[in-house]
Length: 243
Image 1 (cartoon, one colour):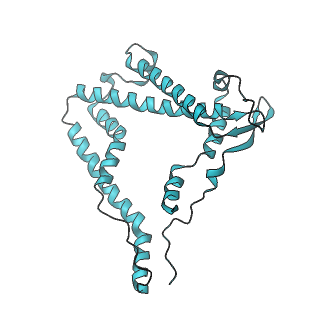
Image 2 (cartoon, one colour):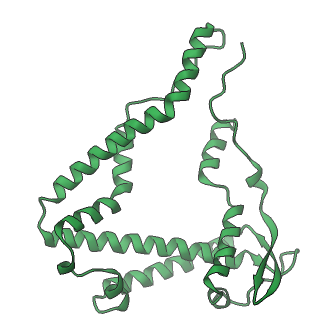
């Protein structure tokens, strides 16, 4: 009897070995060759430290009620209704809500039968495998909707001032996390770009030079670096098929 395979056959380990590459960008009407590599530990640490400093700087500014960042991104309490505050808090709480919902999932992955089981048993197992993603998603969606409703009902009982303080905390955390990720990706693209195929001469003389690139061009570097990284979903699948 041929063994039934769960959907793990689409694992591509090629990204594991894509540690460097060459591509071209167009700058000021000229085509420029770029040689890029995945960062080593030293450069990764530099990128991480710079990103944390950038995030911390934004956090300080957002906490300063007189800063430009605070005025631009954090609304005044009088400009927000209770309903708006509840909605924003719920959105920014989705990570915690999702984790809580997943912990309550009752559906389990189908258990593979013995290889010598009857064909009907294998057929039933394969059917369970085929329908498992949708059944799991349906249950998770129901749990999420319930958790969101519970949270909203709880928040609606809170005074507006309490909701506003939660809003500020969550907004600052979210913005700083996004700033951290943006800066880290930019730092990786900067440290990973070289002029030569030997990867000895950096393409940019300083991070300031990289930062001053037109936004679209800078994004090209970030995207090209990201393509070399092993994606999390690929890694999860790889872990399932590795001995």
